[in-house]
Image: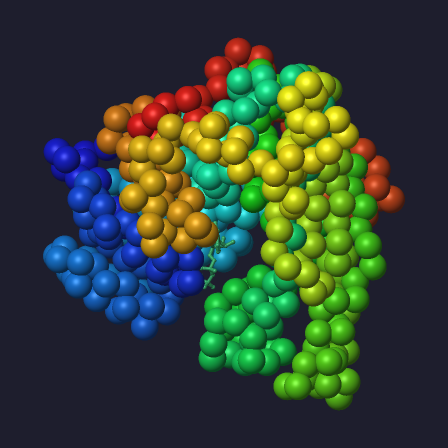
Length: 425
Ligand SMILES: NC(=O)c1ccc[n+]([C@@H]2O[C@H](COP(=O)([O-])OP(=O)(O)OC[C@H]3O[C@@H](n4cnc5c(N)ncnc54)[C@H](O)[C@@H]3O)[C@@H](O)[C@H]2O)c1
């Protein structure tokens, strides 16, 4: 990969809300140097460049010359790896171009548009052998990793059923006034800023689970997806779509006469999906981003000996817990705390989303330095992301069952689980 002896030379493609956060985290590390920054927004590039210099690194090369300037960054020999944090339509072309240019890829999360796109990612990875990691941060949440320990130590017995989802009131993310990140107006598309300028269009035109990985990635690791198990088929059902319209009509900057009050959003407010796995488990996945609600990913893990849920911080283990009563999970969380969290707790301070964002960058960089497989790889990425286009298909056809392709081409039967087994990353 042509890396410098002890430092990975990183380029950032897309330095908006998420990319800036990832950049700030990365700049705290002594084993990376940020050599290139790229965005179509010149201000964001200038800001990122300044952040890099303020961290004591040399001025990175700026790529801000339009939507394809990232290809120049990829062609340069000043980067070993890239972090891609762009709008969803760019993920696959950028990741494929990066793999072909032999730049290791850390890719932000998204859902897929179609199955061909998923295969194109797999093919590029298999053809080039370039390291690829999907940056699914929730997999590293502290309770999620403690429960991974519990699952592996058989606390719940044989796993039967799991739940998770993206249950996050995004109304103030999907609409703003074109000037600020969250809220302040009911504009989307060209008149809006950050995610409201692109993400909301997906709610307008698509009906499916648009953001599956935060809910699915963590539980997929519990059942060794693509490593002894795999998703076989799903069925999906969408509720009616009302929340976004109501938000526009009731917003002080909106109202029933605002042009956006006429817009018909296709995305059902609550999309519920059931995934059936090869080893017989079921997973219920929820996408719920258009209605008032507190944030909760709604995890549940249930086996022949017990159950855990995050919503009530509750656990019940038959024979250990008082009969038919939830116990609070705090003691279990301490007892089963994952070695990674014990080891790196102090490094997680200030990292986003309760510290879990530290681990996802950490894993990417450490696996690269060690020249070892990424803990969440291209097969994980596509099997989770495929949920989006498969749910669109299921919903469009009256909740019909839709089969997952076997993206591993049979290797799921022999691949060994690696996520969370290593106390380095
Ligand atoms: N893992 C997480 O917790 C998490 C949190 C937030 C966002 N995300 C993901 O991160 C990604 C980015 O989201 P965001 O919130 O930063 O959005 P954003 O709109 O704030 O940032 C996207 C950036 O990409 C830039 N861009 C667009 N086209 C480009 C191109 N062709 N070349 C270079 N730059 C380009 C935009 O100018 C913008 O600065 C999305 O996939 C989103 O789902 C993940």
